[in-house]
Image 1 (tube, rainbow, N blue to C red):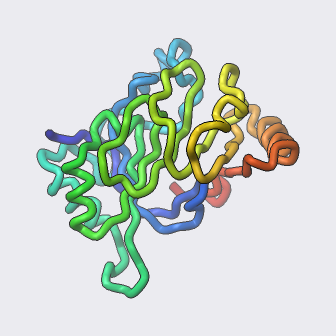
Image 2: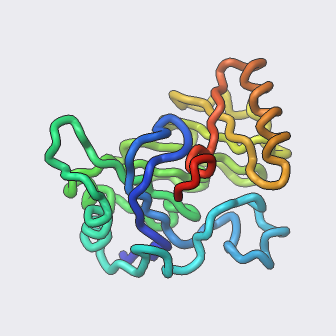
Image 3: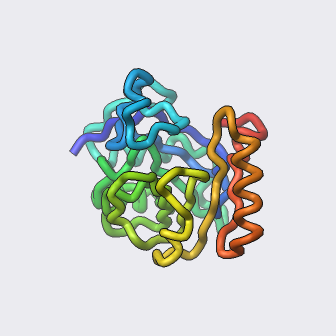
Length: 214
């Protein structure tokens, strides 16, 4: 299959368990919970999304005819030598919703280029075999089919997405991330207090925004 990618760039992971780790971000175009167009935001399942995943016009973006072509583009974006002892390059496949496009062929191609493959998903699709790190970010009023992985990162607060309803899922880490926007400070206060009252949850901040990087 071919792949439509909004952008590919080298940065630091800003959220969750891998915060601060160097990574190539591969942002896939398209999502099944919002079109990405502002005119549709009010009727979207996920109306608070803060990323641009429309089109393929971002840095490094485009249409890739094969898994190997996309994996090569990801490798090109990685700036450090991959031969250093103990360093395994990381690619974070995000979106939009990456599982609308990621398949086993792409995971294998990225592994062949030496990458550890991470995904950030809304959990409405199951991942292909071989993904190394699964981050679930569930959205209220969507059908969740992904019930296990490495980390669950819940944007908080969401009406209809009580953290308690996710605590029985099989994840190693549970994060609350304050919803961005005009109420970010208040949402941060709420998230901090929730984590204090419910120690199963840890606070995740969007550190890339705090320090001004992509």
